[in-house]
Length: 472
Ligand SMILES: Cc1ncc(COP(=O)(O)O)c(C=O)c1O
Image (cartoon, rainbow, N blue to C red; front, side, top):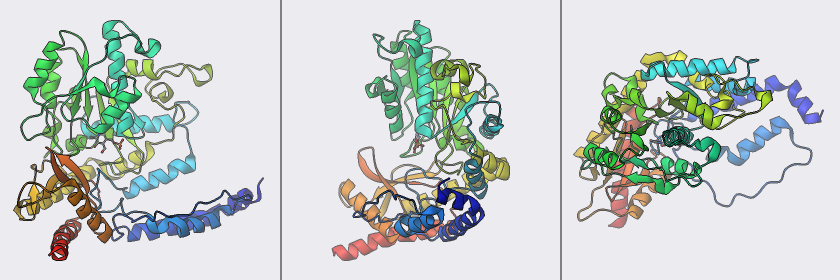
């Protein structure tokens, strides 16, 4: 055996202790760590060592070369994109995933697939989904959308007498996909699935909303003249956290032929709290649902869940025929249900966190995050410096910099956000909403407190007044 392999193996306990020391250092700094690192652009390249340097020195070298630029994205004032943190229990579960190194593809010599099934069952209960939904873990909401749309594509094939999984899309008519405010990952998924980005038709939303106009959707479905299609319903849009009327869309299924996919990557968590549950009423009637775990479930990357009530289609699309892998289709034979074959026991951090904090823990995280978003939204609404662009419905805020005439440019917004990032107190991301260059805030981390929001708010105001002074 190579000398460093045997040396590291002999001293594994010490190595793990050193990792714990580094983990403790990072986690105790996390609340005050600058939100976003300013990464140098001139980092020199490195060569693979001939003999290696052993795990102990590798840890030292890693810290020296990279540790200063690890961002505070897991911390309490990082409100960019839609970014969750990691609960203590999720961290414990995640570490053990690598220690156990189980392949959750479905073989019966490990309990791993059962852990995943149990986790899916816990999540079904958290979201109030009926028992006929099966699910599996994938790497993120993009892949979950990919699976949901792949099932929709296969369902359409059944309606028109073509098995797309076997024959491909060659020669078939294009598949129509309709949505009001789809996430960019829907386009990516359609590209990967051979349906093409142009398959999607964006329908009008209600005035000043990102929720689909139901009358327009119904007209479009009527005009399909019985041709089956896909509707991507949105539960929590990234700009203004808006929700389609899921129950009304589901009701249309009684009259028109379409596959209903709900992208509830983070909005699905509204179901965790009685205060917000009505926003996702009707989600339980979908054909497929996307839920992200590395967002509001606060487990580490990369983790999401796809739910469906059409497992038979899933098996048609993802069947991996090889005698040595077994042919049986069952809830736990994930090799025949997901894009991957071999897969880490990705469910485990979620299992740990759901057991550790339960329904009440997640209701508390969701309600606290939403209340803090409300608070910040109110400050923005009351101030002369900023302008709220949409009501705060859940955990997101969409606003812009107030301008005396017209609107500020996207460049000005980006410069402002860059300065905020460089000052280290709060991280926000730019967007364009209703043609207005804007800023979005997403409060999705279990660590975030009122004090964090106040620090963030002070930093947002300070940056404006500092810039004004510099400009005058
Ligand atoms: C509504 C929605 N769908 C899909 C995604 C894509 O998620 P991921 O980055 O986990 O693939 C996101 C990410 O923010 C999202 O908010």
